Length: 358
Image 1 (cartoon, rainbow, N blue to C red):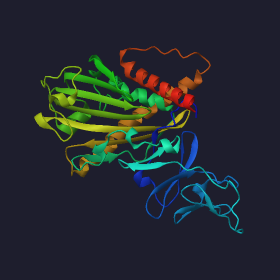
Image 2 (image 1 turned 60 degrees about the vertical axis):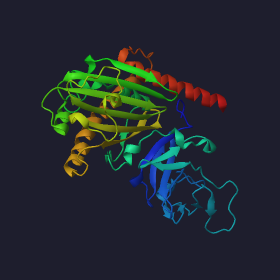
Image 3 (image 1 turned 90 degrees about the horizontal axis):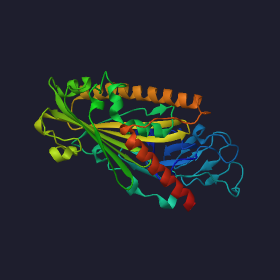
Image 4 (image 1 turned 180 degrees about the horizontal axis):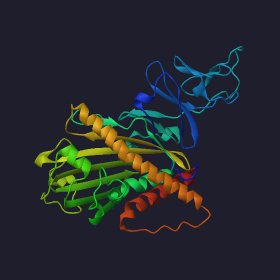
């Protein structure tokens, strides 16, 4: 695929999706089959037998290997053919591509680029996925989204849309009335907004029991190319925060709910499937009601409903872009577009450097 960064980690599957039954998934334009070997380690191979091209996902896992369901060619977890039924000799070049895999934060990650460049430090810090002080609800199954992956990056960095797309659940009309503060690092873009002394959104009222105005923060951090952390929460109105304050600066932070507050992390990994489709993996980590299955179910149902609204909006946006593809793109940019535009430039620069190196 053109225009995507290959030397990066992409979410390929939730850990529970990968088993001894082959899983087919297209990632960055490549057909991939995922399975677990006898030791429980996840494997990612090209989903195409080198003999006559049948998807290997139509075959079966045999110990540490996978057998083609057409003529029985068998491949080990490096992608090398180790058996051809009816003959002892393995033909030269009998192999399929294998990708480096890393399993962390309950996600099976695939390194799409040069294997020797795979670098675990390029993953985001999502320790809340494994911290017993936080309760995780995963978005299962991942969304299949009919849009280019960068449209989803834009969506997660411009949360003013909550006032229009999510007014029935996580949004209020006050959201766009408050300014954002944007900053960037080497591989990240941050957006912070405080929504001061305003009514709670419907789900905030239900989650936190708020019946009075709140001070609410939105902290969105996107990491090249498409790993997005959205930390949101609120305190009773009057906490003293200012527009650019980091939530931790006023006594917030992992594990804390001082002052009657409420907070959770929304962790998002968007993986390109094709130039016009993507996979969307998301999870919520909260540090309250840790042993309450009713709250688990509310998070699962209500927030999946909210994100379905995003999926529908983005699909309609992509369809309209495709419909008018013959025309020059005539978008207008406003202040809230700044973080998304910055991330797009960072991705473009990283892709250009990768191409130049190649």
